[in-house]
Length: 308
Image (cartoon, rainbow, N blue to C red; front, side):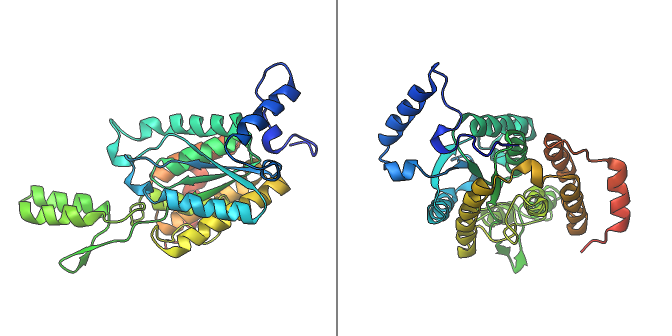
């Protein structure tokens, strides 16, 4: 448990020069070089872990999202400071994105732990990103709120709605079998993914967004807002405000990710018919908080929980 009089804001986790007063003086001096006033530097610091990259199409709207988070933090009396982490663009990674999930989790954890922040907003969406961010936040155990990227807007082909990436494989199988021509598969390719955001099907990204909300780590009602909708920006602003509240109350992930919330997330997973990958990810997230996910219990829950 964090002590009531523990250092906060820029005074958290001072660089070790052998003289804490010197370390804080030097930190304030360098922060001043970024144009912050003394009034701003006295506010609680909210870090914004952002995972945008030119190799991550799901996250290409993050610059706008982050500005909305900052609005919320400032409105609630905090100082927002964004910082980069590893970005895992699912289809741009070799040999597989799963190989890098734990690496990103370590990156998120260590950057939260190493830098002076009273709370953090985790901005992510693509398949392995949200699990990695939740894992890192659970281990760092600094007040945190997850902001999801939101799903992309689906397009259609010949009157049929397309969903990446369920229809990626479906149409590719038809093409390989000779049921779709080369010209047709090219047109489908151009319409599978046309906006920012995660895959608009109940794959890993949408499932983990739902789980983040069911766990209590994301604000209620924010999992499924489309990436390009104005409500997504309002959700970002609200997440920034919530981060300041979390900094004040010092409500930490270890108090949110509990046996009860994990079971709630498992029930939601079963009810929505979510990705089977989510079992692997939720087990890892829960494990960081000291909660075991029992496959025997999961089997019992699956027998009891109807699919929506």
